[in-house]
Structures are given as C-alpha cells and as structure tokens.
Image (tube, rainbow, N blue to C red):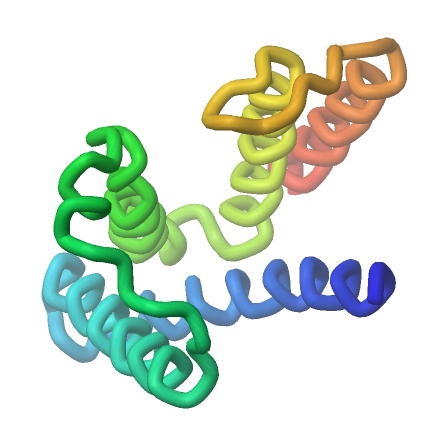
Length: 148
C-alpha cells in the first residue's frame, strides 16, 4: 500500500502541472482569471459531491460540531483558491517548469518548517543536516531550471 501512496503522490504532481495549463487556457477562453478560478472550483466541487455520494460512509457532523471548529481550520479552501488563482495569473508568464519548481521548493521549505515546529497538528520531525542538504539541492535545481 505504501508504494501505491507514493505513486499517488507522484500523480498529484503530474495533475498539478496539467491543471496549471488547463486553467490558463480556461482564462484565455473566459478572459477572466477570477471566473476561471470559480469554474475550476465548481467542477472540483461537483466531482467531490459525486465522490461523497458514492463512497462516503461516515455520518455528517452536527451543526454544533461544525460551529466549534477553530477558524483557522477552515482556511484550506482559501489556500486552494490562492493557489489556483495565482497559477492562472502567472503560468503563462513564467511557464509551467519554472512555476512548478518554485512551488515544489516552497512546499519543501514549508514542509520542513511545519515538521520542525509541529505546526497545524503534525508530529515534530526536527530539522537535521539531511533535510538542509535536501533543501539546498532542491534550491540548486530551482536555480538551474530558472536559468534556462
């Protein structure tokens, strides 16, 4: 199962790259980056509703449960909206390779910091020399890709 999850993680990267291009083309077709972002999220919502209807086995939480969830735990959708809208704005100007290598570098740096401090409920995994080396190698790769 572990290797299947590794494959899924790789496929997330592949689909993010295609999503950038598809959404950029949607922006050209609509001539509106915000509308394109809305369309992208609506189609995602429809897909999630179908998955929920077909596969969900858990009961819906009560309104009381939803009401007491901390405000910051609702920000995942806002992060997704920032991602999609920003990608739609910039991918045509910087290209998908530059965009994705910078996104990956940002994800790695954020991931190492989140691990180190145990932010947003994650277990603590302290920064060590291997992680610093990994960040340095990724940053070197980013520099090489951007140098084109």
